[in-house]
Image (cartoon, rainbow over all chains, first blue to last red; front, side, top):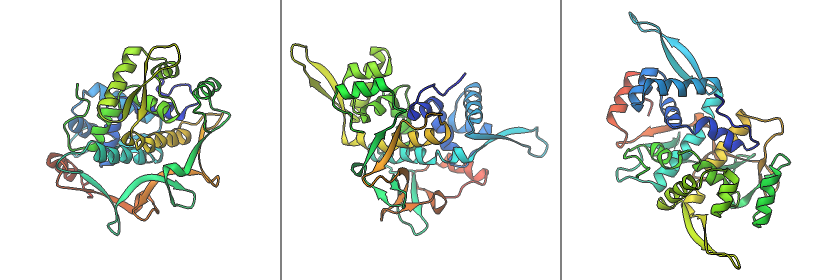
Length: 163
Length: 163
C-alpha cells in the first residue's frame, strides 16, 4: 500500500511515510545505534508483524537498507541500517527531542544532550546558505505555482495569504 | 486520555502528543494561517469528531489556544491559534517539509520555499550557541544519568554506546 499521498504538499508526503505509529521511535532507535530486528522489538515491545511492516515501508522508500548478519552457530538474521536519506531524518528526530525537552519536561531532565566538540550546546534551528542562524521572524514562506489554487483562495478569504 | 507517555525519552513524549494521525497536518494548516474549526475541516476533509479530539488534545497540552469569534448575524464559533510553545513546533514542520521536498519530490517542485528577507534560501539545521551551523558529524549525543540503564546495557552489548 502506498504510504505517500498524491499531493503537492511535502509535509503531507513526509507525514504519510513517517507519521505511522512507531515509525519515529524505530528511527530514534536506529539513530541511537540499534539495527537488529530483535533489538527493535526488545526496545519497543511491539508485535513482530507491526515492526516488520514498518521496517518494510522504510526500506521501500529508501530510509533503511536491509542487510544480513550471522552470529557463530546461529542462523542468518536481518538488520536495518540508515541510508543517506534516512540519516537526513536526524534533524526531525532531534527537533522532536528539543521540543519535548522544553515543553514536556521531566524532573530528571533530558536523557540526551547535543554537544559540539568544544562542549557547546547544539540546537535545531533555521540557517541561511552562509551557515548563519535565521530567526523565524526573519524569513517568510513563499508559495510557488505548485501551491494548490483552492487552498490559496481559502487563505485569501481569511486574509492570511502572506506569501 | 493522557497522550504523553511516562518515559524519560523526550522524543517519545513529543511523538505521543504530536504523532497521532492528522495532528501534523492540523499544525501545518495553523502555520499556513488557518484557525477556524470549519476551515480545518475544509482543508483536511476529516470527520468533525476526530478534528475536535485532536484540537482538544493540542489545547490541553498548551500548543493551541481556543478563542471565540463571531461574524455578523452568525452564532459564536471557535478558532484555534498557536501559543508560543505551539509556534516552536514550526521547526519540526519545516524539517518534515524539507525532507519531503528532497526525498519524496514531485515533478512540479516544492509548493513553498523558505526565503530570508534578502532572498536567500533558509533550511533547517543544527546550530551552536553562537548561531553558527554545525554539521551532524561535528557534534555528539551525550547520554545523561536520566538515560534508561537497561537501554544503556543493550547499546553496550551492541558496541554502539558512544555517548
